[in-house]
Length: 273
Image 1 (cartoon, rainbow, N blue to C red):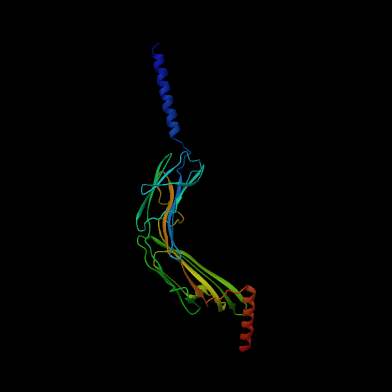
Image 2 (image 1 turned 90 degrees about the vertical axis):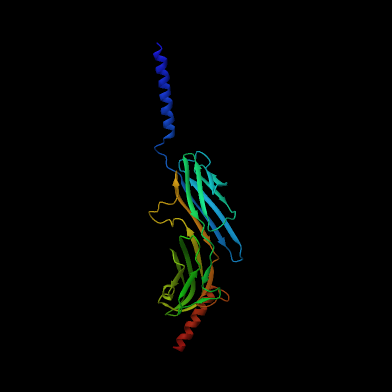
């Protein structure tokens, strides 16, 4: 008779152990995705803005408020939903230093490491008064950034022109790519197609980032390890450069005025030739 209480107790212990194991193991569980960045940007007036932002996603729902730390400093939540928490602030931080990210959540801890690239500046085009025309080659240069892994350049040109039939039109050129060098050479034929006879006026801009972390290309697994996956980057952006294309823009004319001017120029050239 004493055997029955013992067996009943053992059965209860086994049932409790199975229930605990069932709670700890979820075959449908997927580790949360963690994306984030450190971002520093300079403005024309010399001011600088900073941003630290990290997002934690779990489509099954976050069972606890994740604890996010950067170099052991706790970052506060800025926005939240049941599947997503965002941590963000605009406090200044030092450049050319390593930053360790730690994200503690219900299922464990994820972590990542980046280095904030050092400050740098663009040295070419030489200034806002520079004119890039059909006979020249556009050279974009910048000083190197300490700790950088890659640079991203965004070059944009927009101008009005006359074609071989003396018709007015406008054209835009954009170069968007990542490189490891500190310069880009753009031949004039890449910006001015063969049907462009004369450039009337235009402008352009050059933006360069110094980056650290994955470039987020196809097949990239990211740089978040542990109980999580995703991408964390550090980006330093100096003040961008502006320049003219073809001729300086004294005062941007309306499209009707530009079209009338182009027709007038075309008529005059027909008389000359």
